[in-house]
Amino acid sequence: MSGGQTLEVIVTAAQQVTPLIRHFTLARADGAPLPAFSGGSHVIVVMRGGDRVYRNPYSLLSAPQDLGTYEIGVRRMEESRGGSHFMHDRVKVGDRLEIAHPVNLFALDKIARKHLMIAGGIGITPFMAQVEDLHGGTVPYELHYSVRSPEHAAFASRLAERAAGHVHLYYDSDRRFIDFEGLLSNQPLGTHVYVCGPTGFIGKVIDTARACGWSGSHIHWEQFSAPPAGDAFEVTLAKSQRTLMVPADRTLLEAIEAAGVEVPYLCRGGVCGFCQTRVVECDGELLHHDLYLSDADKAKGKSIMPCVSRARAKRLVLDL
Amino acid sequence: MLITGIKSKPVYAPLQADTGGRYHLMLGLGVGREPLLRVLAELGSEQPAALARTQVLYVPAAGDATTPDAQFAVAALSAVQLFGSARELLAAFRPLLQGSLMGTRLYVAGPESFIGTAMQLALEFNLNKDEIRAEECGTLARRVHCVHCRGVTEDVKTNIVTCSGCGLHLLVRDHYSRRLGAYMGVMADAEAPGELPEIREVFL
Image (cartoon, rainbow over all chains, first blue to last red; front, side, top):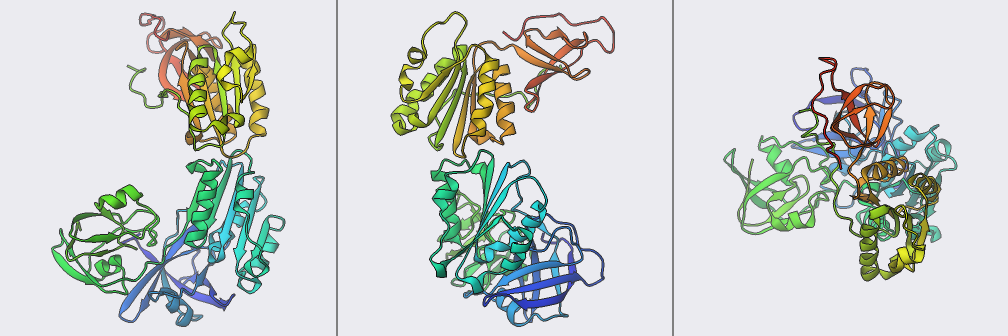
């Protein structure tokens, strides 16, 4: 969380595990154990890249019972603002990074009678840690993991070892796709579905679950939207009486932070709602990219999530 | 006063069909038939196909000898089962939950003790608030859980009741436990033995 203390970590291993995904192992610089976490948690990694600071959320994929190291998987984003490219191109073994304490916005339901996990691509990472939490337990679970082709199936061998009999792999290259309708229309009462992956993939799972009659309390999803770049715009911060430019390749939140104004945040991916900020005035259009505000609230234009959303306006005034 | 202003007291609303569900399970006791008929009619007009995915479990009021078909004529497409008692109905409810799929909505209409027991079973199967609707009808008599001996006293109509388990005088609070499906009863005369407030019938 913003203003909260960060931990200094050292990269103890870095490995390219698929053409797009790099796997990092992090240990505390002072050798102490890392904070405890539960499967589904993420950390914000703070990357200081010359004149700018990147803060990106990454799910912890290592076993929660092992607090000697954290592991994360970073997918190289095509339209990156730079964070994932920084992690891929510049971060080497022995480098120091800062991370925030883990936060779980994608926890397993503790009283579920069955867990149905659905992963698309890099969306596998939170499930890696959850599978560790479920290992040896009595609650049935299935993990359905869809990727482009075998070479893109990150961590498949670890899954085969830790969750044998629970994992179902689907390769686009084999023309094998998850039968969402078949899966979701035939689950026992008390099942919870968890989905992580690309936006369209998540949307399809949610829509299918709804169409099969699932209630919202049994549907869980997480996606950290990579904040889209956009046109530069100007923002005025009413309380701090500052006016600043948000450059095309930076988020509103990053620009506000760069000006020295603190905004509380947790996920930096448009999911948690923590950075919700009141819009005092906007003479144009708010470009909502978050997954937190309802469509109705987005239409009202009274709030914005500065971590991912932008504006196309001559004058935007925020209550900061 | 100990018995008012407590937020755990359940608030019930008139039953309405939840057309977001795929399967519908309806439980009713006595006058609980009326709300169920209303939901069935609503489903029938908004989503006629849903009636074929609806099951009704009902205990007719004592002395009501109408046949299942006549009881729920509107539900001709649904499976209707009649039971002689709430206990029998609830015994049939568990296997039904075991065989049910995600997408099921539960509707319960009857006195609160009946709703409470049905909810306890539903909770075991991890049905959440957004999958259960209940309408209280019939008696407002309470099931009371003694916080001293954990005994349960059924059908309590008075503000003070003698615990069927330990014999203490219990003050019936509004503090409701979903897990126990009962209101908490606490010793009413602990401070001054024998000094009790006026005993009145308040849950009718």
